[in-house]
Amino acid sequence: MMQENRLNEYTEKQERICRKNDNIAPRLYEEYGVNSGLRDDKGNGVLTGLTNISKIVASKVVNGKKLPCDGELWYRGYRVEELIRSVGEDKLGFEKIAYLLLLGELPDREQEEEFFRYIGQCRTLPTNFTRDVIMKAPTEDIMNSMTKSILTLASYDKNSKDTSVSNSLRQCIQLISEFPLLAVYGYNAYVHYEKGGSMFIHHPNTELSTAENLLMMMRPDQKYTKTEAKVLDTALILHMEHGGGNNSTFTTRVVTSSGSDTYSTMAAAMSSLKGPKHGGANIKVMEMMEDIREHVSDYDDKDEVSAYLKKIMDKEAFDKKGLIYGMGHAVYSLSDPREKVLKKYVEQLAAEKGRENDLHLYQNIEELAPVVIAEKRHIFKGVSPNVDFYSGFVYDMLGIPQELYTAMFAVARIVGWSAHRIEELICTDRIIRPAYMSVMEEKQLF
Image (cartoon, rainbow, N blue to C red; front, side, top):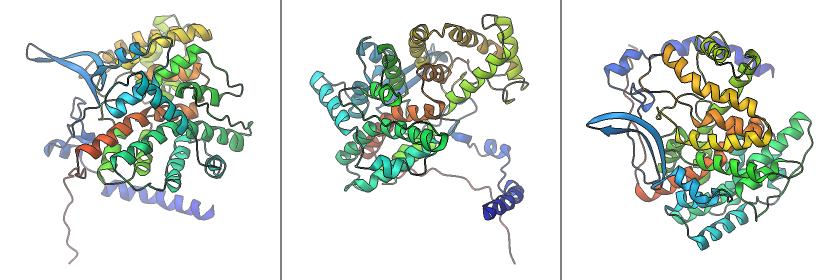
């Protein structure tokens, strides 16, 4: 500990040297035509690849002019809203849509049942894995716990290094099945060893869906309602995939292109997703909402709500960063289709849970925030709620702890990562190697 403290003191002193020598003037990006973050000044991503897996639509050309439109999200040629509608109100569709994304076509009934059966059979871990891996060095950072487990699972796979399409597909299906266990058991170990809570480990049920197993394994009494399962199932489907250009999916394709194995690839994607700028956004929304509740007395008083949102924008309230979390998206402008779908189910769950008052606050912020942001900021495109605005509220109503929020994202997004890994293996055989222009000053020692 003493050595660590000394090292901390040393690195704090040396930070100023790094800042001096690693600083690059912003004007150089414009001078050399470099898009920082692979995005232009309007937030559009730089085209880096092709995909058949999914598509995001945020604008359309009308009379030769590019105009913003209500957002669209397509999985393998189908609108995500239509896919969810096709599942039906009384059924759960995670496995069916996972089949579509992974294999590229909708399954018939026999194929769907077979895939569901394989997912259920694979939803198990090696003997003593929970005790020997997950329960060792537990942490509140469940994403780190899961990443450790993913890398360790490679040691139990005799063909871990085989990157053939069939073997990679087998590994992906197993990981899709195992992710709920890695998440829930990792959290349970943390609660028991670090927070002094009770330990319970419920074995998954092969007859239940992914959403049902998550709820069952998380709860001491293993009980859940049909509404709860349907809402969580829908949230997972909406988070499965998002266009291929997001940070963790790009990471998946970069690591795959190097020839690395499935376990290393998914661990890298997990490390990307856990970043608060990517997978942790709904936690910031929840923290902001809690702050708003403490400072707004009447949730239905739009003037009071608007006034406090302006304080947040002016960096006078909440975390003083001037951001209303859950508003705006890197691609969507008029609307996020995922938010529009999820909101319907949020209303159902809020009614079941008696959380209508909280729902009114969310609805008022959804209405007022874009107006406040437009007044306070010069923006290139419209601002609307994104899926993270409501997803944290959904998890909260389901009793899912905040430590598991990003892990729930991973449980869904492993499907999209898997689809992109398979596509990268089939379509390309070149390592992804972007160029960086050096602006280094040349120096002479003699």
